[in-house]
Length: 349
Image (cartoon, rainbow, N blue to C red; front, top):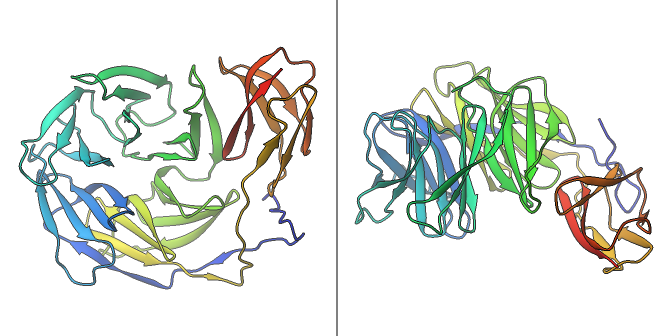
């Protein structure tokens, strides 16, 4: 485990315990993807086979929920994502990504054909979809959507249950066998790199903050909390109440919701942090920009190697942990300094 170095010189230690596991939502069937919309404090969760998406208030304590028609009853709905005011869902058996009218006034319709789509996420006018060993990029600015293979060669069981595909800090993260990998969305051509090696295969994952993420396991019973590469068991339920937790979201206040593929429940787990030192992580600042000979990076709280890549995604320089980097040998142009969880653009004159 790496040490986390704070500006005050303190070592941050996290001990995580599951305080309470309860049922957030119970309906008549298993679930696929789950989405949290912070602006409206809403949870959307796809029913695998009922052809609907359920919407529920994230802080609601009763069983009230809204049913949204997504069509394709029996088609096995997997990934789910809300982009702006639009809701999208993957239909595995139909080989389709479908746009859904949240107000039930628009008939759901396919925007793209992709073989057995699994994970689904997006930003701007782009959606990203996992299918077998590939990630597809969908450009929604055209009608129908333009579909391109973004990354191939994912290390997964073909058409397996991995649904993990999330965007965080300009990176696209994806579940693979015994690891989570990532792609920098700001740099083309796209390159996949290993972000985190694990002793289990994550079905899906969600961030609490820059330090901590949660992941469901392919043992179908366990949810892990992962901090700086160390995985601790947060939830392990071998009963019939919450079998097969798959996709999950973090909704704040140390609370995770996980959609179960069996058991007809969305579980709610509250995980308070005990014996911790709380701090606000500063964002790394690079200067001068443009640069001539050196660049300096302040507010680094994680000491690690750094890499500089060009606009073609090629590595042009690598450095050991430091705050000052010699860039005098680089030709004039635009570059990206890559640190853990951050990619900082700068100009070399």
